[in-house]
Image (cartoon, rainbow, N blue to C red; front, side):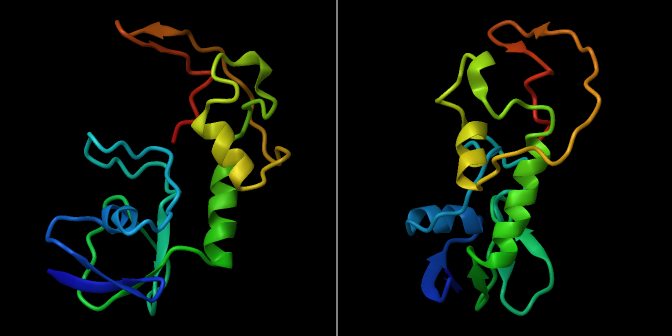
Length: 148
C-alpha cells in the first residue's frame, strides 16, 4: 500500500491506482471531461490537473499514480485559474447558449463551463467547414468537437 495525502487528508492506494481513483473513492472532487472509467485514461482534457506540494507545475490525476508521502492539492487559486483557462479554450467557437444543440441542459461541456464561470468567450478561431462523419453507431460532428 502507498500512503499519501490529498488536501492534508491521509489516504492509501494500491499499486496501479491513480490519484483520481483514490480521490473519487474518498469523495474528494477533481473535475474531468475526458475520463471514462471503462477505458485507459487518455489525459487529454487536463481538467484533472492537481498540485503536488513542493513540486513545480501540475500533474494529471487521471493517469498519475501516487508516491509514498506526497501531499496532493486538488483545489487552489492557481488550479482554479488553470481550469478556467482550459474551459475558455474548449469554448472557442462553441456557443455558450446551447439552443442549437440536442444535448442542451445535459452536457458535460455546458456543466463545466458553468462550474468555472465562463460566461463569455475571450478567444475565437476561424471556423473551418468540416464534414460530419458516420461511424456506425455514432456520428462525428467536428463543429461540436472541442478537441480535448
